[in-house]
Amino acid sequence: MSVIYNALGLIVSSVLFGTVPLAVWAQEPHVLDVEGEAVCNFSGECSMDVGSEGKNILAACEAPRASISWNRKEKGVFLIACDCKCTSHDNTGWLIGGASVTGEREIQRLYLGKEFTVEALGKDPSSISDIMASHPLCEKVDVVKLRESVFVTLLKQPTNNQSAPYCFLPAYIMNYRGSMKIKTNDVGSQFGKLLRVEDLDSISRSELLEFVDGIWISK
Image 1: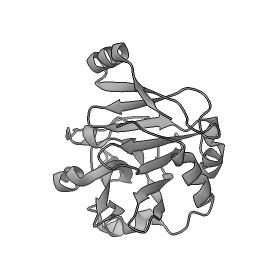
Image 2: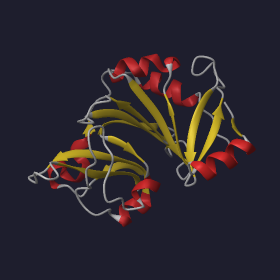
Image 3: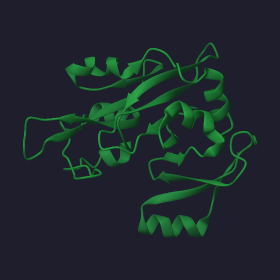
């Protein structure tokens, strides 16, 4: 699959939305046999919906929607995120790492929250829009972790504040000492360790790799 830049679309999208639309076609018919669309921001973060061609992923998600994201700063790394489309944002997904020195690709199943981008979190938003209302971040953005992040996700947490009953805790997904890790500043999640699910369970490694290996992104 190749990624084609459309000059007119780039100009219009850049002015109106600050994003770059990318038309994506599959190299392998079992992955995407029809035209799809990915949306990228100026930082190189891209995302697109997992369509019916990823039916095994949607079935494993047990959710109405799933997306696949990548970041040009970390080649070959993908985040597949299920989306419950619910106010709790109790989601899961799979983090697929790039090839290691042994040639083996690490796959981790993770607990995830609300989809967000590194670029958007870098703007230090005062509140995060949600289905019913907006909520603040639980803490200040960790600029050191954010700088190293390939992806971010926002975990919805209850508070003891009646005026702001919920907040969003940032979780940073980064390459840490040669391995992809999810990290937080939260003691309750053991700083991110408890966000990793020990087994893939509902879907096989081969099914996940078959899907992401059908996606080829131009430099």
